[in-house]
Image 1 (cartoon, rainbow, N blue to C red):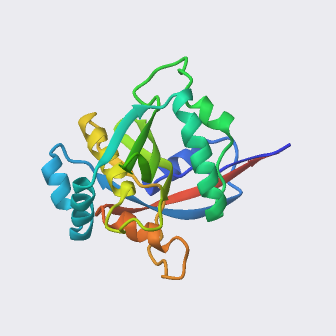
Image 2 (image 1 turned 120 degrees about the horizontal axis):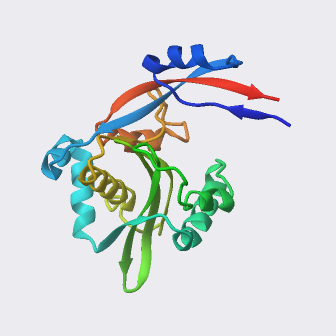
Length: 225
């Protein structure tokens, strides 16, 4: 009976877009994100990271971690969707159903430079055939932009905190996107003033180590009834 649309637009585009739309925005708020400018050189990209992230990646690479970058497919969703569903249930956030993810694998009828493509990064640490840590992240590429959409991490309690499959997964996405000529990597959400007691604090601290730029979006809400 109703539909609510909440796009994220930059300040430079929101005024023009609002002026040409046939309906008015019911409400308007703001949302911050962290956007990383991608460099053609892996060495330069690594040097731009925080020292803490450099150490985390170096220590993680010393461990037997396997990382894959793959075009999203229905078969890959068989592992990803149950994993992100279980992870979200323990963290208190909602994700779309399987059918929503399956729609991302369909070939669009019309192709353009802004036609999105979707990629899955899997980073796994195994020891003696036992998975000690597993991270999967879903990336959307549109034109010269890449956007992190969803991700989860499962790890055994005894694994050293210095080993991070989440860090190696995002690094793989960053380097693969740079290789494809993509210019920016959007970490999809950031809280500038999060406090240690906030459940999102650790996520923000992790993202901050990649040394991106904080960008504020205008979020108008359109209600169709």
